[in-house]
Image (cartoon, rainbow, N blue to C red):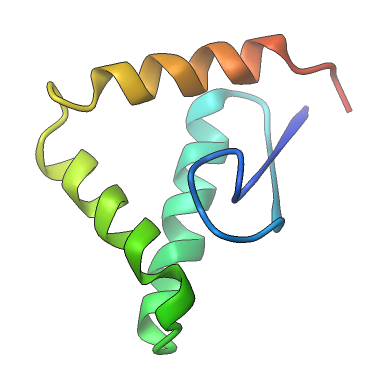
Length: 78
C-alpha cells in the first residue's frame, strides 16, 4: 500500500489517496475531483477539468500517466 496526495497527482490539496497500484490512487483522485465538482468546489475545478481531458484523450495523456506510474513506483510502502 502506498499513498499519493491530490497535489502529487496535479490537484490543489494534500488529501491522501492510498492504493495497492498507481491506478488505485489515480481512480481515487478522479473520485475526489468528481465529488468536489458536484459540491461546487471552484478551487478544484481546474484539476477536474484536466482529469476529464485526460480521460477523453488517453493517448495524449500517456506522458502524465507514465509520470504518475513512476512516481508511485518510487514511493516507499506505507
